[in-house]
Image (tube, rainbow, N blue to C red; front, side, top):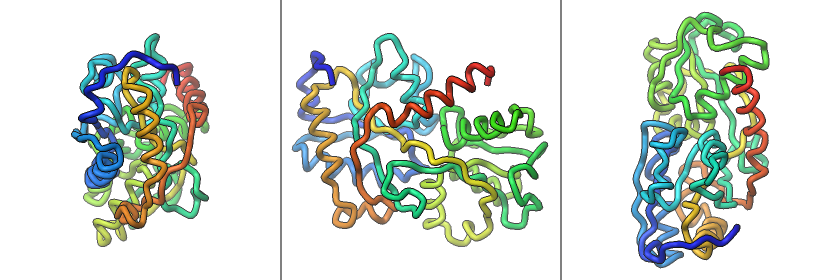
Amino acid sequence: MQHRPSEDRTAQILRAVTFLAPGIPREFFDSLLRILSDTLSCGVALAAETRSSGPMRPEEDLFRDGHADIGFVCSPSYVWLRSQPEPSIDLVPVGFVFRDPRHDGDPVYYSEAVVRADSSAQRFADLEQRVWGYNDDSSLSGYYATLERLASAGRGPDYFERWVRTGSHGASLRAIVAGEIDGAAIDSIALANWGRANPELRRSLRVVESWGPFPIQPVVARAALNDDHKRAIALALLQIDAATSGLAAYGFDGCVPTDDSHYDSQRRALEALRCRGK
């Protein structure tokens, strides 16, 4: 990473924000940051921003205005933040690995097209002109993955009778169970964690199609943060032991090195959607 001038006050307290809760539970990030605090010998303050899966507009950028030093965002937000003339963030070159036989130890996840277990829909094609839910329009798994799936079939957003913004993956799942929407695309990690917390409700749902794998949600750091701090954060994350840290309870297996090229596939997909006017 290129060295930038920085503020030494971040050595005393690290301000973190997650845009991924409650899909990935707030408690996961609380535990993760306690480990970082102990390893880095600094204080950590965590905020959870639940209105979107990450900044996609200048007024939402908590990193540029100095309100956050480290963040957990969805990849469309990372791509947007890095595309700015003077990016406010750098990638922390570490990716989370969550337990799933499809992952094979890679920092990836899937988007699951979910319906009620008793739905007449047996495949995604059966959901044409139904009501489709999504968590928010910054989400890869909940929103852009659906647009990519439709584009691959030569279809657009009008494939569904209407779209319903639910505000979170959990809210989408509850809306499916209640019959308020016919289906939604759900982050596979969020679905697994929600299922562990709600086993009875999980049995009333069914996955009709899986999309991906997609690159795991990135960890980012404020661009002006001291480069030594960024390297220390990356090293601390790589050294976390899932079993002894208690993070295995959230399906977490550990962290592996990544780099910016890990998100090239999403850059291309998002650019293709932009060119189609989506």
